[in-house]
Length: 463
Ligand SMILES: [Zn+2]
Image 1: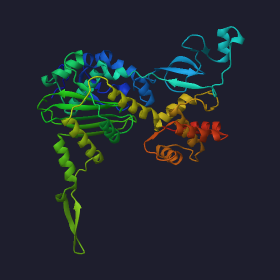
Image 2: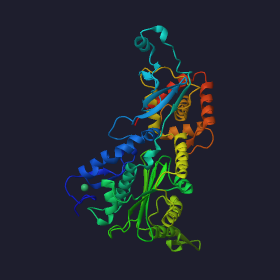
Image 3: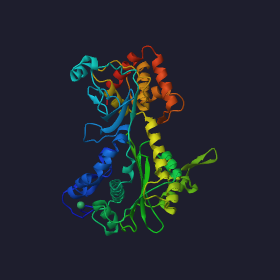
Image 4: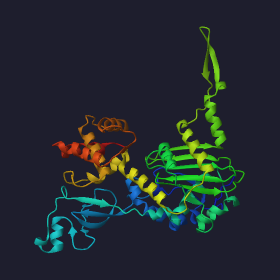
């Protein structure tokens, strides 16, 4: 069968569309039946870049960047230094003083290197020294949560749901059953197919299904034939997208699951229907799936039939529950309200307080912090930055460890041994934990040297 664009049906100049914009995920998923200009490139200006810009703080927190770009997306922050506000564009955490001139928001103060400050002030008496290791620094980031209720977000989510569902059903060409969602994606007109899920319980369930910061997508068919796709965006908010009220007959896969993780790994499950998924699951435990393997000492030995084992079997019970609830109940919000805001703030807090300790984030941190010619590291007891404290602590653990060469397994061993209490894949850091970790490091007289040693091991860690 020839490939045709799912938006317009044209056959020439098709391209690979990133179903989720490349700048928002480290785990790319593609739809190859999308024409290059009209229904791929143009979407970027129409709605995707607005969403990407507004979410740059979150992609920075999660160490997600576009595979095309060299840098992480910059974001605006207000940094308060000794009580004075400075508006700064940041990429990472450690580059606040990285050679630039900072101007206070009210334009009365400046911070830069001493020599440069004297040059600018033309009078040495106007320049005061600052010890960046002891001054109080507070970073505030204004998260524009309006973007989560913006039409560009709704169009992007519709695009994700539509292209993902089509990819899983190998759809080629335009089908009028999708006319509403296609109109909304391409023009912003028509009925908005997106709503926001506002049941806190459902968020907890999705948190249990996947990793921190993942995008989780699942699709199901309602009793009346409507196809809904649920998208959990970074785990921050969950949206329902009505892909079609009546699906084309060729769409056979209607019970779908994909989790895209920040470490670029993924989980994908495809079933035709929830019934088929249930049968497969039940089949795994059914009696008649055992066959005789012979008789030993008069006892019939029964072993399971060789059948394809069901992958990711542990997520099925929760997945069934979620789907069942969401296909029966629709209590969604269409615009922001207090309930949704509270959920969002809570999820955001968990996201920013947790550290995903993976190679990528550790390497990035070392490159940003222990760059060539950097000054000796001295921790500032008066500034709070939970993520960087945890990363310093991990570098410290690597520094004191006897292992000279790092690997994923060695790192996990070092972390497991060194992190207080329960360490799973994520590690939640509140104020108390942050102070504890800092205290442990700073009580070590040689901690600056040990950090250098740890950083060197990370730099030498081969890809
Ligand atoms: Zn097209």
